[in-house]
Image (cartoon, rainbow, N blue to C red; front, side, top):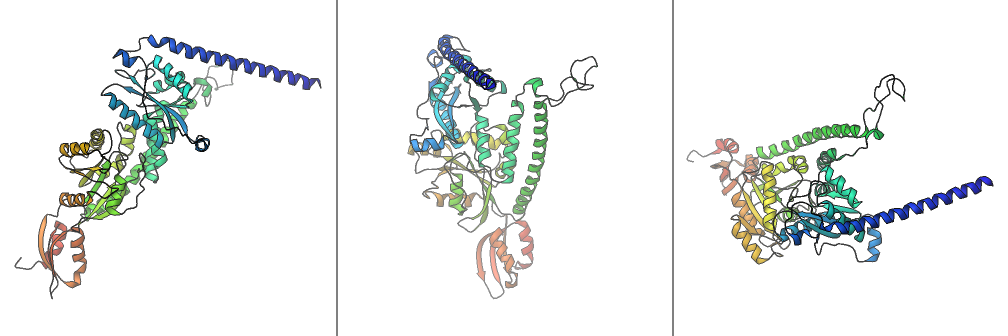
Length: 501
């Protein structure tokens, strides 16, 4: 009985102690919040404009919080609640708003609920906390006010910036690169796509591993006989957990690189086969969510996933298509690009993007209804330059023409000399696009006339498939064809060329 009474007293004492600590933590939090309001006047970095620097600027219209209570309880179980923060260094206020609106779309694609978005005006991001210590305290107030559990920054933060900002705002901090990597991880379906995303994630995580010194030691190293604690040859810290983790990550990265190289070899063989058969290739490239897969489906009936989401397509799809004149070609859908695409991803997806570099023609799709289509064009061309596809002919396809501002369409068609406006949804302009593709594809270089016996029907089929038939006539001796063909096929047809020809 005495034991039971003692246990009850201990439990009561622990409960009171816990309540006291909770009250003290609440008081400290209130003190911190009050202090954050007092330091607004503190000079934080170079002053650009007093009005801009005075406060974080709220960006209207970004909240995607659900209003339907029945949905809220279900979805909050799996969705993170985020506050967005960006640093506006150059350009206009509209450019800064567009950048944060794109970050909001990325966050929604990753499965988050956007509660608020703020922009800080600075000449450059703060090296310690990205937005400056004073503004970081204000951001913590916004996090507390909205009940957010994650802060998403519109830029790639250094490991130090992530740690310092998390220490101030007291919730998880994610940068733009980690967000895009998360989306890629969700959308990758093929073995190669998953391997490429895993490699990019490991490259990103390696310098951001956090360790806590000797408490994470895996083993003990050697020590002098006079050392206290431990037996012989067990004194002093050996390999720490963070070192072990880094070593394991490097080993996995090396294995993934080997796997990706093997898969690249397989795709190179397919590409060489297409090249040997002289089938022209067209690559669809463009900004994410510009409508590339919808265009592929319209042109080929491929049935590729079409979704109003960023990075819905990660695995390249290659389909056969035919021009109005009957010429066969391949059409490849590629991964979408985005401004400031993480360099880890550019490297990891380089083999996928080679479809663009090896194409005979690039259809550069841009969203005509986007607020800044010129920025999308510039971002995609920058990545195309990075993968070495600089000399491939390009047709700019301004998609979503049915939803675009007519003035924006006129401006794009005037600035981009080789451009056409289409709508993959309604079919507007697609006939003109097909005719343009037919005109731009490389044509066979040898013009030949041959009388092919009916017993060699496979040659006639190959002329239709790989060449360009100018005229065809069926005679008693065989099929008389006038066509443009490649040198290899011209050599096979040489025995059937009439002497007069």
